[in-house]
Image (cartoon, rainbow, N blue to C red; front, side, top):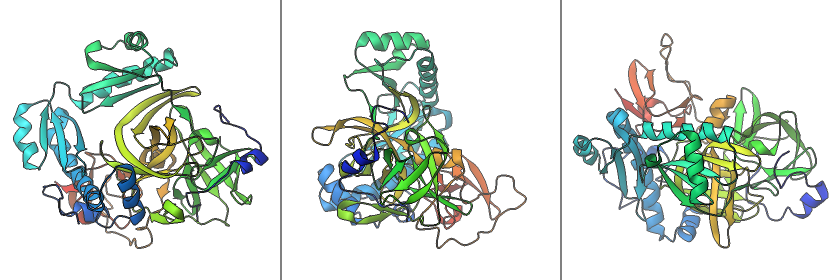
Length: 454
């Protein structure tokens, strides 16, 4: 085990268990304009869980109508952003939502000639200097430099699409400048955010339902998954290594870590025994449940909620994707930064946006009294890396879909698709609009929020 919260005894862990907030395995009248009104329905945002709405009202200070409208607007904005990303190609520079109800979608481009096409999709156009691909290349140089020159003085760096720069969080300007210089990056491409906060892993106590690793340390269940006939759950990589044994919150035998990656990424999965049943459930406020329907990635600015045993059920917004965090135990790339608060013990628990799984809690800074920042490991890379299928509400109703057996790129349930990917389905070509894992009951022709016919 790693981290400053590792390796407590079983007695100490049981004493610190506290209240649990995550299950174990077992019309928006003000909707934003756009050409895909079915997106909210396709992604389940037109029937959001009451527990999510209540938490959004509390944490984002929204009225019930605003919370409902926000989820629908975010779903439709994601589809429109995907269409525009495919249209703009290498001129695309990012997309984000804003406003209390996320009614405004902004799409950035490097060419003023794209303004008309962006506005035709009901979005605001932002003309910027650097395309997203260039910013991502800058961040990759910083990633490489972090491996060579690890320092606690620059704990976080990420692509900020709203400012069209790569941002470095550092303890001071001098530390940031040294990091940028070591990476061989031009200073004009980088902004600096000075902060004394240093993210730490949140794994001492449980986030979600508790499980113990080798009868000592404790972490939390994220999302139920399957691999063939084997059931299990996704969690944080820093919680255990392959072969580590787990027991449940009732101290009964549970399973074994099959794969784990940390640092670099913060992902793992545990295969469970026949006593445990995988479900799409996530425990929310006051022991109630919400159910996961998919894993469509939320936009920057979108609302997300998190479950954890230390602090319960809390909501906030996505600050940015593809964030690198330099923990004391090692650097993790590809995390998503949020405004959701968390505290030690919430690690490994699930982040959801509406009914879409987003990721598992990795670490953060601050607390739920004064506010803070929390990072999660996106779930789609976890599913893809380990060959897992997310347990969702659609799985039970899935039926075999017609396939183009001769096509090498035939659409397939269980595969993780990225924006821009093209597939063949029932003799028709489709292009992916939003990052997601394909569900058996959600073929390209039936999910216009995720696929565009080409």
